[in-house]
Length: 195
Length: 195
DNA sequence: AAAAAAAGATGAACTATCTTATGAAATATA
DNA sequence: TATATTTCATAAGATAGTTCATCTTTTTTT
Image (cartoon, rainbow over the protein chains, first blue to last red):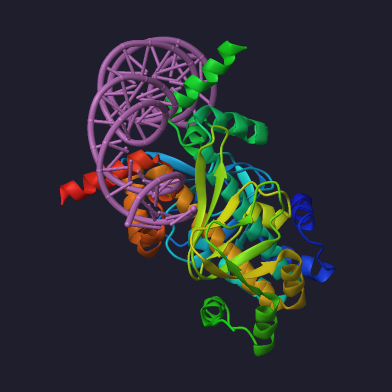
């Protein structure tokens, strides 16, 4: 069996669960191997699961009319990922979610999550806290997009998520930061020259 | 006493509460009059409250280094507003939240909300649902910003929120849509000419 | 109702970022 | 390990969106 300690720690950092609730929570997740380039969510299909990453890296993105892709979310170890509009409303996804590396994830399906939340106040609280943190995280991203120029967004991202930066293809990071890959390439090079 | 039926309906649309919980919920809110141009949240201070708007309109915004302001959120009747990073983490706000009209709001403070959520599984569920919806809403805004150009963002906003559009100063809408007031003015005028 | 202040329109000059194209480097695959 | 594929770098030309400055209209204040 795989080591799920990081998951336990992640959850415990949000709320202290009773042994029973923790047991039920863990039991609700299924351990899944996802190989590189494999999709776990695709547009048109309902996102049945949300994923906790034990090992590996994922990218969620949409493709616009012109065929350009735009990264909505990254996730490496100890992050969660899904297409939340699809998952929460159980409506067709608009995003692709793909593994960037051979990965190992804990998967929970929407129905099971609902039962879990209904079964225990404590577990409901856990998911409430997770949702609140997501809201706050997205709000910060919106503010960054509104107030910063391309170079500032890049610099801030690297500072905040150095580990993520190293494992991402540059074109994916560029599309997350709302700029072209060419422009990100230029920014990085200008930075090096300045030094 | 003011009519709070819209609030009851808003909550009931998210979850069916027991009479007792509904009573406790309502009791936790305080009815407040806010006059036009009055601030309910300011940078540097902790956002102690979140607000439900019974009547009126609000705008949340940040001011960047250059002195330009950027609208993070609007709210009219039956919307919630706060600086969520500040409210959730009880850390200093970065946003201003100001009344655009003479308004009437229901206000709940952070401590009371925590007690409420702790006191009842059902109420915890309510706030979990609210947080999930906020997450999904913000995700859609991020996607719109990544995938659409200025005119498309404007057109979509007007379609989605016609009532909000009518009550907002144009400069505030421009800054929400991540463009200058001059450019929004041009877009609107180009649209009129096309017809 | 007049005066002052704020909001919106307009246009010309400017610039941050994009587009297109091409070659080099790195990575994946046969 | 050779070949194919993907990613990254670079640069010139194009453009969506900004900046600045002025004028008109609307709203607020006196």
